[in-house]
Structure formats: C-alpha cells, structure tokens
Length: 135
Image 1: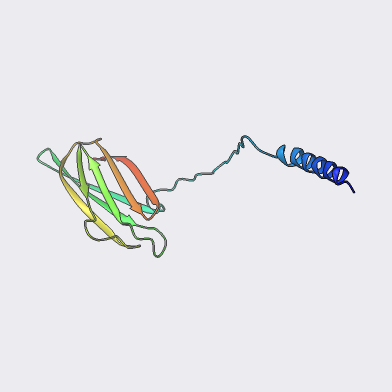
Image 2 (image 1 turned 90 degrees about the vertical axis):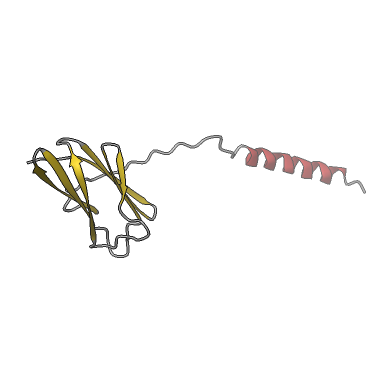
C-alpha cells in the first residue's frame, strides 16, 4: 500500500492553507483621530489664576495666586511660575489639594511682561501664559 497519494493530498492542503493565511498580513495601518478641545475662563478652568499688581513709586509688585480647581483627589504635585527669566517653584515638598490655593509675590515686574504657569498632577500637565496686567 502506497502512502504517496495521501502525502500529495496533505502537501497540497498545507500549500493552499499557507497561501490563504499568508496573504492575511498587514504591512501598514493608518488611523485618524479627532479631538474636541474646549477652553475655559480662569475661574472655570482646572487651574485657577489670579494676579494682583501693586505699583508704588514706579515699581510694580505682582501677587500671583494659583487655585487648584481640579476634581476631588487630584492634587497638583509640581507648580512653577516663570517671568522675566526667573522660575519659582511653589510646591517644594508638598502638594496643592483640590480647592486649595498658593500665592507668590514678584517684587518687580514690568507691565505686559509674560507669565508662564506650569502645573503637574499625575499624568496631566497644564501650562498657561498670561501678561502682567497693570491697572
């Protein structure tokens, strides 16, 4: 009894299956995602920002207050303000819990000068830029 016809049928079946499965590969995939981004005023944003300039004898001091308006259990772990080449770390060895605020006074700033605030909470980072508003 010869196994040759059975072997030929099995080899043919393996070849056909190999062709069918082998052509199912994908060389590239493209995906398009859209995202809607809404902005909010400082009073409604997750990171509240207030500034209070005080001008005396031509020198403007600026009090900057940052409010954590994130949802419950979202503490800010890193918070810095940059203006005129000066970086101030506001949360050394502590965090800012939701609803809490912290302030810093810059002793001398120029009206219109840029302020950058960067806050980090877990994997979220918020950065805002404002100009010093002198009234």
